[in-house]
Length: 208
Image (cartoon, rainbow, N blue to C red; front, side):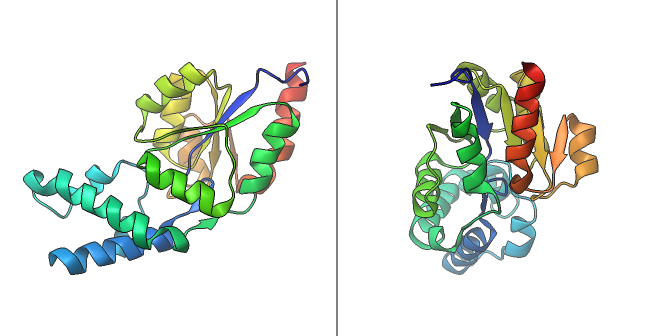
């Protein structure tokens, strides 16, 4: 282990490490067909980030949200995982953290067992996984893990990083562009994770 042994870098999952839109669209279309409730799945996949319950509440009455969210998660596990793809640079970003002797962790709003299915299916090997956290709640987890950097595509990811006093790194692979992520407080915004290894090397060199 080298001098970076204490380094921990957190990553969001959906639209940061993986493109889950095809799988999520399939899951919502199946949920709509099963329940008879119209759901605009194209609209849904254009605003990923918050917990499933928040999205379900746009389509179902309050008393049905929890059970419908549970059903969605079961459909996702069975039908959606195969449709998800690793985003460009995802594997290399994790490898870059390891190359500096660090730990790569995932902190996501996604249901933890489904996040694990995605990671395993795509061969994304991380040191820890924390699910069902969003916004400031991510900050609590990141702080407990000692994360120095958190990478995400959503404004809620920037909020979480700032709450943990971790360096907030935005990627414009999700619903927000570089301007919005910067305005929210991102220290840097990358087009995608292919730029992350060089950024991390420069960031760590500047700290020496």
